[in-house]
Length: 176
Image (cartoon, rainbow, N blue to C red; front, side, top):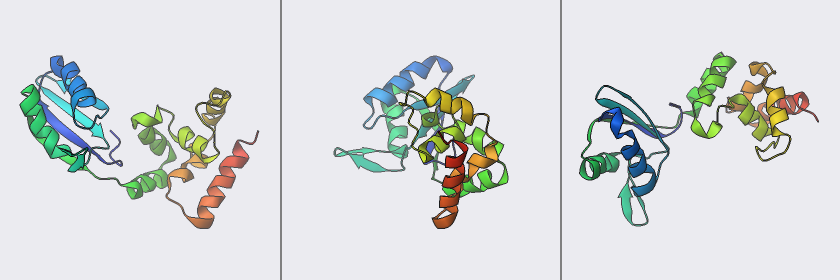
């Protein structure tokens, strides 16, 4: 779970056999759909929802971490044993990336929208390489061979000259 991005974590009183039901409800029937990540052990399920807020309104309907807990009980009969709100923490991610670029790469890969590309996804965005580009696979192959420390600066939260220096380094690494 990418604990540096806003989301919610739930511990459910639910066995693995209920996983499809939980996923269907949250992704398709809940007020505001979320991509579900879950894992079960015995009669407990750990559920993570990236981007889930504490409390909000969408199209005039309440939603959020607390509301979903109520709805899981009401709609599916699943008890929420515990739930936690996770706040965005880009500063912490920057600290991780400054301390160890390889760990940074692995942490980024935990975020589903990253699709396991890690720092290469961020570097591609920095130099305007889109996954839709015909040569994106070649870019990823080349990127995977680059020292992670060269790429990690894109996650430092740099501003001004430092951010421009990082971008120049990445651009020079992948000049066409």
